[in-house]
Image 1: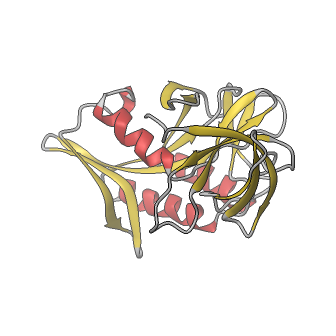
Image 2: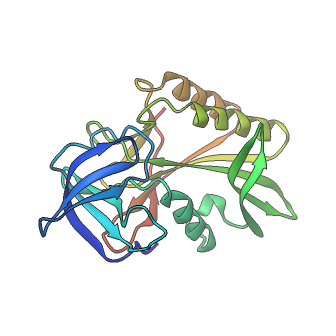
Length: 233
């Protein structure tokens, strides 16, 4: 998926009120950027970190700049939580996720469970329906292990229970974690930050929910889903 161009490099001054980031661009200008990430962004919000922002002047937008990438320990990390669904949609169309290929129709944002919408519903006349939830992952605290979530994620835990219900009804259900960084070779639920989610993921897997983790190839021009990495329970 091509990123909005041009991307402008700068340094983070502060990330605050969840959706705002003060950035000093390399030409010295100070701008306020939209931060499309409601999570804690652990390890990705320290003042002075190099960042990349997109620029889109539009009178309908309150902020012209959007935070897209953070450079952490020499690696580009995608922090825009709006991108994983777009990345997955592109990968599904290109059959780039073998475990999810072969379906005739892919529908986004389908109602299910209790007042929820599944990210994608995959169907085929000769196969059970596949309910697909997508989660963005950008946390790496130490070593080469990607983790999710980076804060308490009650909504994501509820989604796991709803996926379990789809399996119980005879359908297929998948939790897909999209890792927007290249410096990880495995994935784990972060029990330290959200023990309920970690327990819920293990329970869902035991109930038949499939857990897939795919890592992205990262760049300032393009991000794409690249390879599967293992889930370490």
